[in-house]
Length: 516
Image (cartoon, rainbow, N blue to C red; front, side):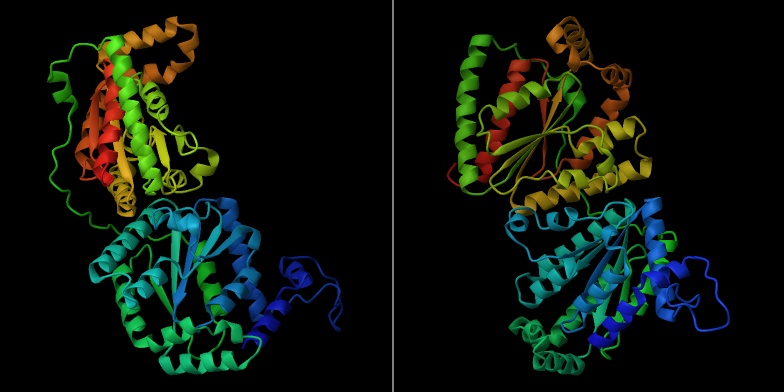
């Protein structure tokens, strides 16, 4: 099987044949075809290959979506051979193949990071071998995932696939099926050939021994994750015939037709937690402004405590994500500076989130935040964050209503993945009133070394103050959940706000770390 498939593939790779197929003029009489220029007639295989390649080049030119192919299935179904042949037919400079064997980079971040990190850009085709489906089925079969955790993982799959489909990634999920007897014969055949013996490991025989269980689990999983926007296609690999023609035809069709409509996923009900409110903050009596001498003394003590907790978190490999949102001129930069002054510079990174770059626009909107997640024991500080989707993108009309409304659930799921991994998530909102903001704007304009902080965008945002207030309160109500609660800080007094920032991060770390 391998030799015949490889032989036809190599024949179809002829450069002359492709040139002739693309319309190059060939002069000849009724005689034997000129071998230097090829024949005008293409074989069925050449037509398939030409159609697939043409569709891929059109996809790259239009760059309106990415195509992600998930290849999963039983052992000894020829997944590797199929992908090698497919990659040979495709323009592999526009194709990315990932067969993940998780290493330290994957294990020290949330589970889904390994897939988000490798998503293809719009216009490209990505292939995941085994992927999130194989991980889940094998983990359940070995009881590494209990029944409840397995159901949770399937729910995460549905959410992940829906997020990709909603944001320009078209999914093609292939399951390679084989019956137990055919699988046994295939393994024995591979083991008998010195050239393929290396493929037959103890793990492959163990999976053969579990064929019935794995088949049952896989069928149930496919049923529970089959959606209009991410359907399953089952391919029968029992005969040993090449599956390349079927897959090539399927992919050509996917790349040349519009993606299917998104099938809505139900959102779990929010736990009843009272969110903060800007109105309540305004009604609260403001404390007396902190004197500088008291501030300096308390700042030193607070930073010392935070430094101790941060070192403990690093030793225990607990990641920390601190996210700052707030009104313009509320003092986010000052709060970040005082916070990071207490940390070892080798252990933290500050990410300033602005308008997405051209590369980021070629990915789903969450991609750039997954890229910036810290390793275990490290700290990521976000100066503005993923909440831009439901704040500035909403208010300024940079995202359509369906997208920003869907953003609430996508944000909740994103933060849930961080918490499941054991991260401490601290969400801070620094609030000032409208009069205080105006005073700070005018002070910045009058101070040469601070003028760069004041932009035309700041003044435009101020004109939509009420719209932002409404968006902020709705953000609180939709994303204030256990483990990822919002902390609303009155930042009219900068000194007191900076202390509250440090103390809140310390409080959350102390609650997470044993004996802290």
